[in-house]
Image (cartoon, rainbow, N blue to C red; front, side, top):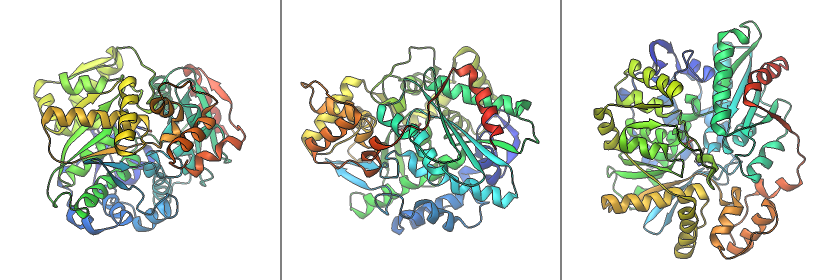
Length: 494
Ligand SMILES: *Cc1c(COP(=O)(O)O)cnc(C)c1O
């Protein structure tokens, strides 16, 4: 199977190279040319366990890897709270797909447990002996999950950049306490988009010669621009569907709608890949917080990032430039690389682009979009807790709220699956305030974790409860314009 850049058919790669490089040399993202025609027997997944589904999905999307079963086993065995990795839990008449049962309590663990395996295998198979320097911009969760995945992996260094004021105290504590001889964590003055843009610029500058080709160091990315990040996420759509069939809630073949709390558009795009592989996915519902650039885009066809940036209680979705949307645009235009390149250029230079009406209509056939304010997010957390005794985090609550909007708007009478992307204990202040709106919050994030546990009886995940005692190991803080120099210094530590 051939991969190519979303911006140029001439820039081809196999799946090993696509994982190694992360981003195509022209700034585009890698996609398989033949995703519509991959032979995939989705019905087999109905009776398989999660690891077997992962092997099947990853072998289909990344066919050049030898030994996928072994890579999957090494990635997941014993690392999650349950061996099914991602449980599907009934809540009211709908379902919550819990993606946060991994080592850092965020859904990013599903992909970032797998990516190091893929990267090391790709290096071994291609005889690549350079050091891989992973650069990652994080809105909070990717950073820790990537650090946990790559810590002390031979032949790899990782640098994580997070927005100084843009992550929760628990998220920050998770990152700055990360041990490992090959890890660096650095705050960037600004928001997530500043950090992400800085990282993209550093990639471009290094490709243009700032990092000499004979340096013995090559860059790669752990963000969802890397196809090795995206592909493992496809698995849990199949797993959830199989769970609904097993629960006799649907018959194999019935469409199921998935509601996804969205930031960089990676998670929801994985659902679109699952659909392309044959899974009967109905609507993919894109849920946003007050940074509702995607709601507007999927309603009007105009993507416009020239708007105020809101710091919300669901910070992992505080994003105005959703990188993976580029892949969707490529797919719905049947590979119109010129149009995609032009839109991305216009986004870069003017901050906006508009797709033709025909493209918008195609998008609307498969995607529905809605958004939810912080106030409604808090009300939703309380409502769901009071009605169903289910405790959800702020990101999940955004999606749950939008799911109800969706059901009302289209009169859907079939079950929806709401993807749950983080443990409520990663955002204890916001969740506690939602449950006890009359009370003044006291103490720090760790005190609030304990308060939330005694209030609800839902246990704090072990990886979070131990954080408070751990020493802070990373204190660097830079401006976005210093990011390239920081990267070049890190490359010298090789
Ligand atoms: C990353 C993240 C999201 C957004 O996922 P995308 O793939 O970027 O759309 C949503 N919720 C949480 C908790 C996250 O960490």
